[in-house]
Length: 237
Ligand code: IYR
Image (cartoon, helix red, strand yellow):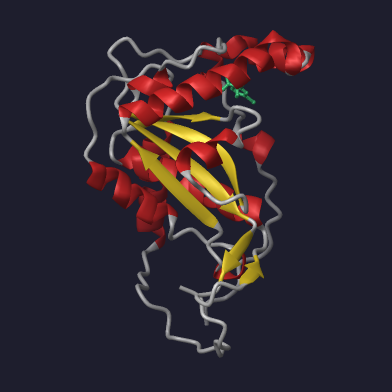
């Protein structure tokens, strides 16, 4: 998509502008907060299929995230093929066994105890979709030469947030999964070595028997995550 020829800076009038009254702003941000409060990471999925178009639009939403120099240093592999999901589960469980058998270290394993996670990852096969998120350290011009990407972890993190919010908007649940190391995903999915697998998102409808760990309901109150340094409001005129 990118070509080596210089792109001049060309300011366009802001498209898609919409201005809300203060009351409308408050109502909409509160409604969005109420909606996002209903998002929970889920470990038990229903095998109910999810249409490919839903996944495609959610990934297109992720692709609208801001990124360093607008290089969009991400790639998503969406997998519903049962054979591929089984391979990913088998390889991920191998890594997880090492992790839970001690590679993680005592402190990390203690921190995970309240979540009730272990090395068994059946959801990697049961969830109808896995989305593997890759971070691209370099991009390529259309002539094949490489360019450096900037703020890659930040950009990919923001895009992943958009993706999770879009899936939640569609009524779907997901679980972030990060087997360590994850290099096997490049081989399984045929991605180049310049791409670093960042996480696997298992996506689907929650199973009827799905639970969340009680500790996941503990969210820091606003006064622990926000400091406001308020000044006199600027005059509009
Ligand atoms: N990757 C492991 C361990 C794990 C790590 C963290 I940090 C979590 O919040 C949850 C799990 C796993 O997926 O089980």
